[in-house]
Length: 308
Image 1: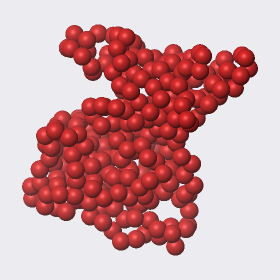
Image 2: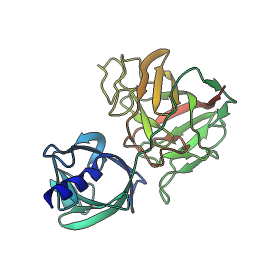
Image 3: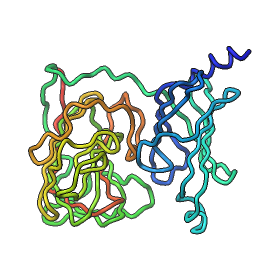
């Protein structure tokens, strides 16, 4: 009987893309489980409690049930609730090949969620790709090519003199058009200490940050957020225009910031915190992050990559 239970526990292993019911920011989550069916089970998680890819501090499987938790301040409930440390508990079972679970605080279920296995993506960034016809995601006139990410929240973006700009804390913009493999080119500028980002296929964030002169890390300007640090700080000072080029083929990403290749052909292993779309095998939109700091965007052009 014990052997049978351990064999079943192995079904939790792997990477899971998670859709969350009633998630207020329209975000999706990501989970990786290793060692299920052994005493060495461990995991990584993106979602609540925060934006990073977090190593799970408490995780166990018992009776066919996966349980893990984080202790921190959560943005749910009254102000008193939000200001105190609480344990967030995630519980799930594998049903019909899916991970079906709940997230609870103080013994109350906050969210129900469902995970599907991350797909295998076989495209590689090799010589088999050529550039197609460029698409201007920003038309220089208005926000007609985008939708709001969070319904009912004020957009917070305007266009003046051919520049798209937001106010800090605005809605995120989601492109109406979806893409698979591509080269993205954009020009933008930031004020002091401002923070934004671009979501590729609505799943993987390239960080945009005013951090001129600072040592690079996985949250720096040009980073693949919380995954790959840029090889150097290539940021321009606040108020100057930056140029960013991102090439994405399958899961393989290259980032060039202000003419410096700062992320060179790295494989993306899963969703980042900006993700609002977890159907990784399908084309996805671009997300322009507006819910952090203010950013001004002069141009935003996508060139699809197609087989030769």
